Image: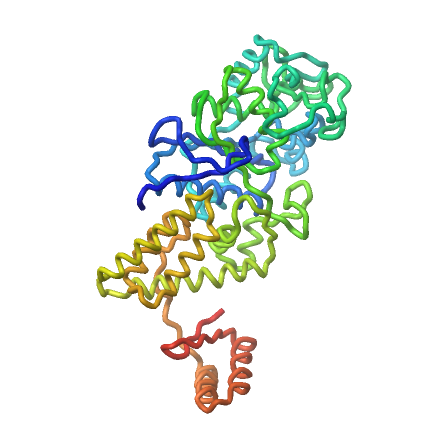
Length: 472
């Protein structure tokens, strides 16, 4: 597709901004990855569908990407106050596995699900447990610059020494009371201060712990991303993504420690996706109100229907998940695949008028996705092209292939459905319904249609070319 200007919503500016990478033609991107103590759920799937769409939009406009994603396999505690158990060790004990085996199992499951959603894997996947030396070095830099202090349970970052700490999340530090955002810790100098390194408990041995200049322990959650993104993308890079829940704590802390360590702004564009909701609440592991890929497949739903569903909502808007909405998405995807096969079978070469009209649709589509990834509008433009009676089928097929480079629905892989036949009984009912329609007996025809659906799982569609049927 032709290169065109891209605007992205930058959380740091609270506005859409023209995208200008640090190095012309190249993009460095870091994506906050999962904490692998349980199965990934639909909230994660939406986040990484957003990330994948962002990558595809940038690639469609001619950029070369270097993408990095972390795997948090240590240090993410059950409380944002840097107290409680390590989620990895807690889950490992509950499942009677080692923390290492637990991490390996859920990491594999995560990427299996991503593959089913046609989400391209990052260029670099970095595990926290494999980058402890880099984290220690970063903490030493902060210590040398006077940003750290020691308590009985770890090394902490003094947030009040970083003058812009409140800016990113627009926090009011004067009104921030102990316990309003995090749980109380009497040894902390300031309520928002956070752990860079936690000491192992003296009365028990952790599965995951390392020696450091400050004592045996493990890294804080926030230091992991700062150490790894700068390890692979340098101390200035273009885009950092994550969920909106990361804004007030995790990403605010990342900015504080990264920018303080190197003395300048590290990330140019911060991008955040909204939640998937279930009955008015955020879908999350902690609430136990989540659905996994296994839940999707257990209902016989194609995972790409879930991808289609995510594309129907803008990534910065909340999305309420229902099984009904997923069924609607699956039907839409099925119809799109059928039309794709019809258009592919059209051997007539596009004429000059087709080429001109297709180019107009392509321009509209790119304007939509380049406007902060407006996939709902992009889908509407795609369907307008599909239904355009004045556009040749062969031109539509070429257009859909270009659109799919961004949408990622694998339309290139669609194959003709295996020809199925009807039983004598069902065949007679289909013919009976057709006769009723010819005779103007529409009520009787509708009753036959309902019977075909409820008793035999046959869906009837009336088209200008006659009656079509398919099995559910």
